[in-house]
Image (cartoon, rainbow, N blue to C red; front, top):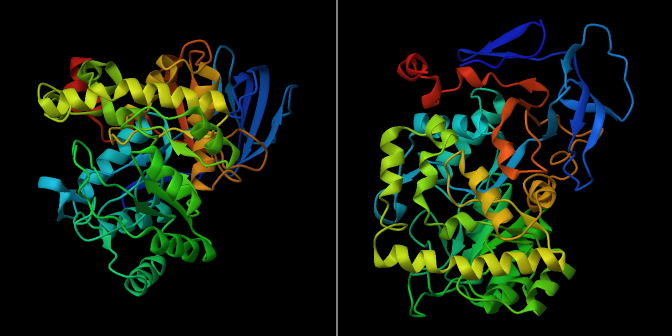
Length: 445
């Protein structure tokens, strides 16, 4: 595995990884898509010093002595993509994901697939806490090559409630909930995720237990008072409204079980509650797994398994799930038109799925430029990290994506990746552990 910067520098070996850091990198004469929703700026100059953006200019900048220079003519520079809803493979397995495991190799390969696909930050929205804590620690120590990894730890739910037994905190009383949340907060989660769900994914009857609303509100306030953001799984408008009234900071999904009222979208916008898009949750078009970027980042076995996944194809459950797309598409467009903060999230953990999610947003009628903001700055807002991430602005971390096609004209051009940068360092995509880089595939190509 190798990280390669754009210049000759001293590199430090970390567990077999050569991590090189340039003094400076200057992107010259590039078309800048800064992530804020502003129109593209042609002929821009962007200077990166260390891990941060030092200058952004519509006019020529003189390169500092010793800086690497990138000819941006015909290229498009934008922020790295951020996925606000994954469940990193390698932490859980078996029916209902109830068996907790520590498959670090599987997790690392999944993170490589994300980086290869242009994703420079992800939020794990529920998993085996021991696994995600370990992966996050390794990422932040530079021991693995990975996107920035933000995690929730354990979900806050109830015994016999949704996700109760897949690593969740089962709240029986306020005192019990506070004690368990104290233990979680001591481990430093980036966000705490709550659950307010009475039907589940596919369950038609209202039979799941939920944390009492007054208790949930007190737990949300407790977490917020300690400086940690909160998000929540919901599927119905009423439950979303209750959660917002209880003080939740973000929604882990749009409402997907039913059409929502326009007043709901306006309320979300007025309260600036970010919503993770997760259209992929109900996307049953399995032909996407034949697309080149999926083939480059997923094994043939994994792609074949996903094509035949009964949750998405050829079963009553798959048909029911696919039938929800009409409501999800309508609700997403309604939120966008009302001015709500939509943040890209997939709820599908394949690296390439961010591009599928962006295509679904465009199919819902959202202009490509707005989709790009959803996938960058809005996603950073969801995480509460907009001061450091999500846009190409002076002082922010230099997490960048260099493209050979204009994504504001066709959102699919986000797949035309020339280079990926994390913290000012160029990722050597050819050295990441993905199928496209394995010897047999290299020979075939």
